[in-house]
Amino acid sequence: MTATINTDLQTYKVQQLSLWNAVALLYILLGYFGGITLLCLSSFWLNGLGTLLLTHGLVCSAYLAHDCMHSAVGKGRRLNVLFGNAMLWINGGCYYGFDRLALQHIAHHVQRVDSFTFDIVAAIAQQPRIIRQGILVLEWCYFPIVSFWARWRSLLNPFWDPAKRKEIPRIASLLLIRGTLYIILGIASLKALILYFLAYIAMITVLRWMDAFQHTYEAFPPKSSLPKRDRDYEQAHTFSPLLSSRFPWLNTLVLNFGYHNAHHALMKASWHHLPEIHAQFFLDSDRPTISLIQQLANYHRFRLKRLLCGQGEAVDQDGNFSLEHFFGAVDVSFLMLY
Image (tube, one colour):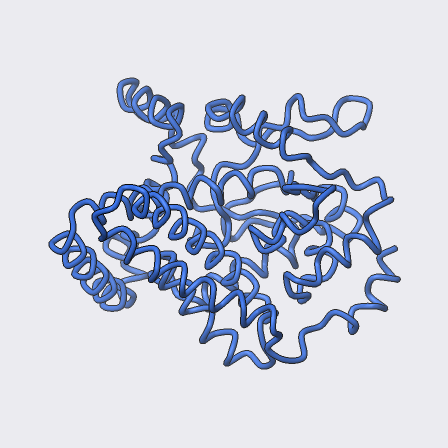
């Protein structure tokens, strides 16, 4: 099957900025700025609509930035970098820089492993008991404190790592600019600022949920000697958590990110091609899809277990796919530097 997929790759390569990508870009911009506008109004119902619209705009901006990292939004790298930076500015990934995030993410595809500089399980275990319990309580309540911890740790790393001091002016400038914009929003409407924060928390939660059950890759710290993994290993340790198999159009709500086996088979294919690739190569294969109910059940059930024990395993002792010990990943892999 791998050979067939490679042969058909040219069919799905992006040749130009498609109508679907243009629609996604327009929707994200309207959702982001329109959502913020609705947050500032006096109507409770419009505030609720604005929060939902802003949350969805933030989520889609993350997934379109991901496609830009694969140069799958338009023809030529320059256009993808332009749109990718715009999307990262919207969702807060701009502090780390598009090129560095793209390099880290493509390595995930090429090396077929995960990398980390922040071992979340070990870091939680090392905390004093009262802090550890506080973290677990917040995560039990679905407040993604670990995600904020990881982001701020990575963001402030140049301030204590001499090797990264040259990044301080850029990060400090971005913090100043974005911080000023948040202050202006808060002065205009404190309610809008609070609702913006709720929408951002919701975005992180959606991204974490969608990312949780896509892989069971091994994770290694930087500069480790990495094992050689082939395409068969990649597909055997990759899964497709779909919003719906019966109604495929629902998957466009997350820009088809759930078609993850298809994405890893043809990583330069744009999001709107993934359902067709999945139907052509994976619909009748032994690569399991994970239903929405299964995803939500495991995400809820193991929301603390994954923080204490890691992602778990998706294969039982007999080699069969099983969700019983598939705890899931903790955070989003492509919006921050690990």
